Length: 147
Image (cartoon, rainbow, N blue to C red):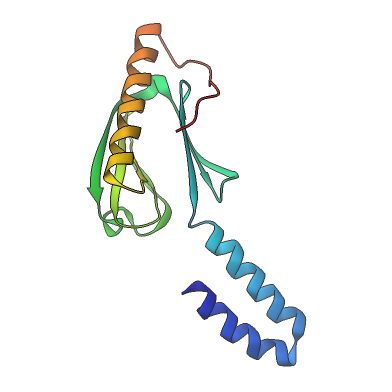
């Protein structure tokens, strides 16, 4: 949808001003890249990277109180993409399976998952590392494992 919405006007603009048409296509691809997220969960906690490189969420394991798999609607969190409203933050690429994380400071975070099984697996990992961090007395250093 983003491609169609940008390529057609870019083709028309390129007739008159070629560099402006190219700029529009580049901006569309840049915007579309932010609809993809990479989720990294390890002993240090949860990290969410937009387009695989831009960190938007970094939650230390010691600050996680609960993590659960849920079926969410993107409209409940402000829509698709990265959203932050008050005590709630979300990185949702679609409505459906997600992991909802509750932090010790009362914040709630939601992150899309590909399937209900992967959401349950991620929630289990986060619950386990959070419990381990609480027993150890705080957030642990990040490790090499990735989910």
